[in-house]
Amino acid sequence: LLVVGGGSIADGSARIINLDVKGEPIFDKSIGQGTGGYFTKVIVDSVNNYIAIGADGSKPSKARIVKMSAKGDIIFDKGFGSHNVYTDAAIDEDGNIIAVGGDIGDNEGRARITKVSSAGEVVFDVELARVGSSFTKVVLLSDNNVLAVGGGTYGTTNPCRIAKLRSD
Image 1 (cartoon, rainbow, N blue to C red):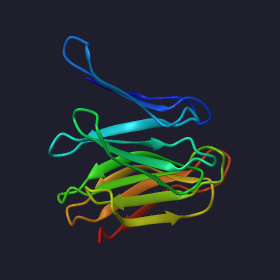
Image 2 (tube, rainbow, N blue to C red; image 1 turned 90 degrees about the horizontal axis):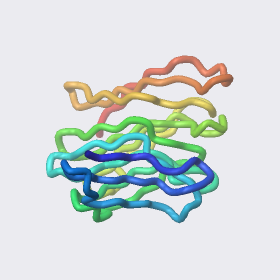
Image 3 (cartoon, one colour; image 1 turned 60 degrees about the vertical axis):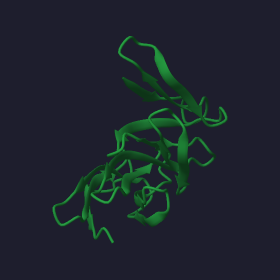
Image 4 (cartoon, one colour; image 1 turned 120 degrees about the vertical axis):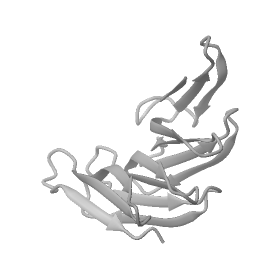
C-alpha cells in the first residue's frame, strides 16, 4: 500500500509512505524542508520504481517530479516552472516520464507539459496558454505522441484546452 500527500502549499513537506500487507512501514519519506509541498499522484515504472508528482512548496511553488526506488531511495527530485503543480503523469514505452499540470491556484502559473528521461534528464518542458491555466490529464497516443487536456482555473476565463505534442 502506497500513501502519498503532504503538507499544504505553505507548510509541511511532501510525504510518501509504503506499507506492507500487515500495515508495517517499508519506508516513510518526507521530502522538503517543511516549507510546504505535497504529492498529487504516484505511478510505478516497469522496474517498480515510484514516480511521485505534485508541488515542491518553494516560493513561488515549482511543479515536482520525484523518482524513488521500491525501498524509498531518491533517484532524482526535479522542480519545474513557477506557480505550478503537476496533476497527472504517464510513462512511455522508453521509460520516459511525461507530467502535466499548471497553475497552483494563485492564477499566476501556466499549463505545463514536461518530459524527462528515466534518469531525470529533461527531454522537453513546455509552458502553454495564459496565466491561470492548467492541464489535468495526460494520454499517451498510439503514435507515441502526447495529448494533454485541461483548462483555466476558476475565475480566469481561460477556456477548456486540449494540446497534442509530438513526443520527440
